[in-house]
Length: 115
Length: 111
Image 1 (cartoon, rainbow over the protein chains, first blue to last red):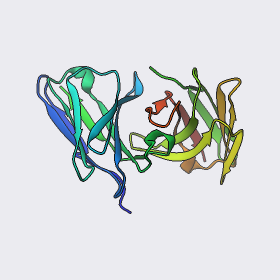
Image 2: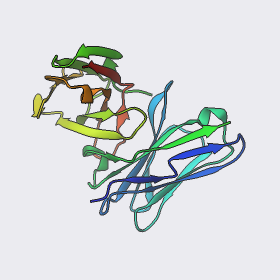
Image 3: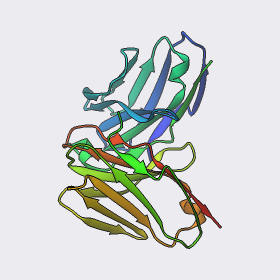
């Protein structure tokens, strides 16, 4: 099976712009979670989608949003970028109904740099 | 906020030695998982231990869980240079709640 893919791998944006990141889960997986990883805060949960519905949401401002399509592919959007949004954004998919009771399969991440 | 806290933050050992990393958490859990991350890449799942289990093995990995102390340890035996990575513990307290990660232990294995 192909693994989780994320596009783009690297991105440089300017403050105030918006960005959309894409994630394709492992075939058959219905749950997709997004995480932000920074040196200072570590890995922080953004949100989780299951069957096109947001099932869980982390403690991030409304500038961070996401969605999931009927083929389970997911996108996340960050509007009005700030310098502090520079991070590695990781997507993970899981096949189980209780997604976080089971292992998550991570993509390689998108490295976002905001200047 | 972080649920798990790994200890030590960084560990440097010689190839062939054993590496032990610890994780403490704050609230009750359904399961605890360990992940590995090679420099700036995605995480790879290593092992999952459920709250009613005390020990699990997978190859050179041994994980213990002490729910009374809210702690877990990951032992890597006979370490190799390829084990150099950051190791994270992650917990969840029910079937549908998000995984909460610790800040990780950076392991360096010197050949």
